[in-house]
Amino acid sequence: MTHFLVLTSAVGIDEETPDQVADLVGAEPDRLGDCAVEFAVPGDITLPEIPGVDVNLVPAANRRKKLLIADMDSTMINVECIDELADFAGVKAQVSEITERAMRGELDFDGALRERVALLKDLPETALAQCYADRIRLNPGAQTLVQTMAALGAFTALVSGGFTYFTEKVAAEAGFALHQANTLLLENGRLTGQVGQPILGQQAKLDTLNRLAGERGIALDDVIAVGDGANDRAMVEAAGLGVAYHAKPTLAAAADVVLNHSDLRALLALQGIAEADYV
Image 1 (cartoon, rainbow, N blue to C red):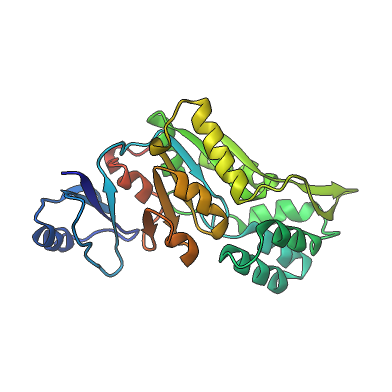
Image 2 (tube, helix red, strand yellow):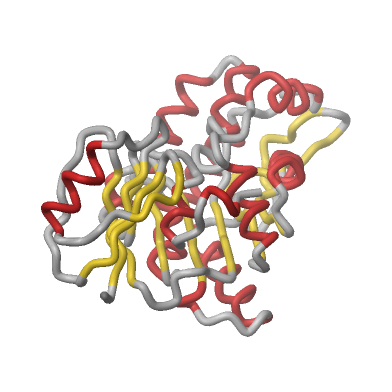
């Protein structure tokens, strides 16, 4: 046994599917919980395709990770904050189109961020609080993922190309030890249309991963990174386990693990953490 085949699904894994997969891979299922089942297998097996279920192969070595580094928008939370702010400013369609292209990797992230923030000029600061209260929710499993990893001794960091106003609140709600993002500049209670420098993008996320791992003596093999867009690619590729979560194709192609049908608890199952140990 060198790997684990892991089945995950937000709606649960039925009783029949593990038995069917067991016949295909020649290994006994081990149920981690209602939504996850694993099999100890060789590393050269063909992955079965199961409708509504994510099927991933992870190495047995260094399985339990010591550092979680996660993107925020559309990964830990349900929306892109800048698109929701743009709705308050009456420019959502224009901003969302730029966001989508940037997430697919078609635009330079720094330039795309400046262009979108410029469209928010003169938006009242009060819109930030209203946006958070009305639009932003943790994605299913976010608190369980972060708090369980922390309880098991891992360090947790939220790194975002979004804004510190939101990462501060999301980090506190989910239980992250650290958060890092860009800063929206304000003057007289309104957005100036500018973002603080330097801009935190793909390279800064990778730099943060390397810095946190170095400071704590954690090998890159002991890092799990999760994101959904092109600006998460460098950190996802660098981590021992890189996860594409309901992601754009450019990130899915680079990740070790792709999750399209699971919630964030799947990141615990990938590490062999059973539901009985969830916080």
